[in-house]
Length: 379
Image 1 (cartoon, helix red, strand yellow):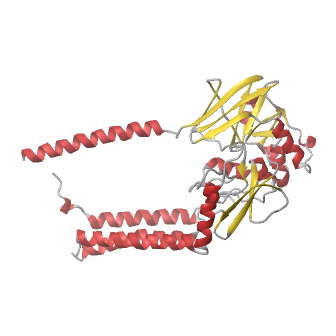
Image 2 (tube, rainbow, N blue to C red):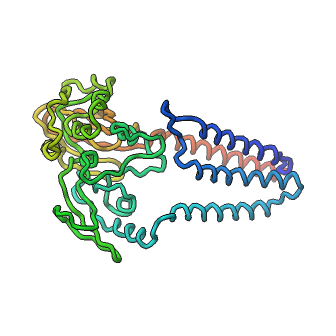
Image 3 (cartoon, helix red, strand yellow):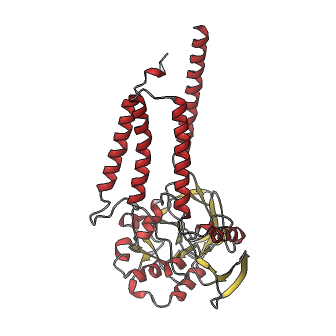
């Protein structure tokens, strides 16, 4: 049996410190693109976390070298470090925030209703959209998944470390994403659906025209051609055409024709929205596993959904698996004419493989544990 006391703790502490320093140097000086965009969003904060990560093994190294290493002492230091880092995290999160106001927004979010499932609230405030039934136009992900960043890139907002999700409630980008419901602290003359109050705060839920989450389009536009348009016109163009890469044009076949960007009236956003509403999918329902809808068009159509594309999505039409087209970070499918039912289900990529590996690893752990136990009893 191995002797824990013979572990070279000092050597491996230095190796650990070296790995962290190498990691820090690499991401500190590497650039994400030719324009020199840094991968690091907050250099000062990263430096603090790196210093904390290094301090622990550095103290262990010194304790070993001065023959003062003691497991109880190390355990106490670990607890102290946990308290310090938790305190730093709380301070960072609370900096510049009003706790009472924060809790009010949190509680208001739990009261917001899910109105028409085909639409979202025109907000990316996580306090409103993560505590109840409301869904916003923002994407909450600690790492910001690639599809949201791909969508951002269509409007020149791409960054390696955050997603652009804050829109003015009349911006066509937010309307394209289904931002129909506005959470306002004052009445702006729009149709008021309800009033929500918490403490001293009152919000008015207002309604405006917006594109549904799923609608059919008659055209497609190649990504490179979309990017040639002025940024303020791109969302309106996408209300009329699904964005595709050159490699995906063949998948569309006769479901949509190439868009002539001159045929669009970019100044009449409401008119373009009306077209999407007329061509919306029917019986749209969504839950924590995916969404479903029915279609009934007079001819083969290309249907676009403002749902972030991911390899984990599987789509079936009338029970038969179909291809999902990546449309500018969102999803599109082809549907034949007539009435059909589309079902989208999300499965975490490689989840089954991970579960199998975890199961095998657990079985190996049990076998080794029993082997060690039996050997100790014999000895």
